[in-house]
Amino acid sequence: EAASSLAIDVQVKDPQGLQNSATITLQLKDVNEFAPAILDQSLAVDENRPGGTELGVVMASDGDTAQTLQFAILSGNTNSTFVIDPTSGKIKLSPNASLDYETTSKYSLRVEVTDSGQPARTSAATVTIDVRDLNEPPTQITLSNLTVSENTAPAVVGNLQVQDPDVGETHTWISSDSRFEIEAGQLKLKAGRPLDFESEASISLDVTATDRGGLSLKSSFSIKVLDGNDA
Image (cartoon, rainbow, N blue to C red; front, side):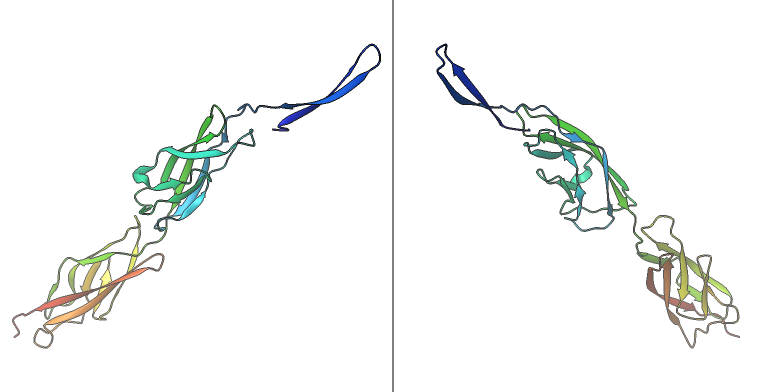
């Protein structure tokens, strides 16, 4: 590694005092002395990033400085989520990869590095990839009942449920019609606000659910007013 050749000056002299000199050049043959050096390391990426996103570079070195290194993923690459550049060690998301924190929050890749010596030597380490959670909006709102009787107030219309990819998320609710309120996940007709079938047989209502991060979803419902026996 320090020098590829060594020059030696040689001088000869006979008993009569005649002499001569020459330079002998020794070519040093490299020996693969060192295995590649690679340590356990960590990378991170946000969930929902597109395929092809670069996460970082796997760091490795070799005491035989003239050699090149080759990288490969041995195990832990569930669904072939990641690809590694064999010469640079860059790790990227594969083109069709889909990262979801709620499904898998961490990957542990076993990465092998091989040098170009003869014979080649290898080493391996664990590269941990942490998937960072992002706030995602609600995806669906459902209402358990779509009818309400006329001339009855207060009244519970039905139970509201919201689907959200973020586990454990909580939501605030808003009704577009001031005659209704939402309490403890229930859509209610307020006291003193009875409905009249003859003047309004159905009501169009928008319900908005907003998560703690400020992302919201609005859904529209048609509430049927049931006719009662008017005196």
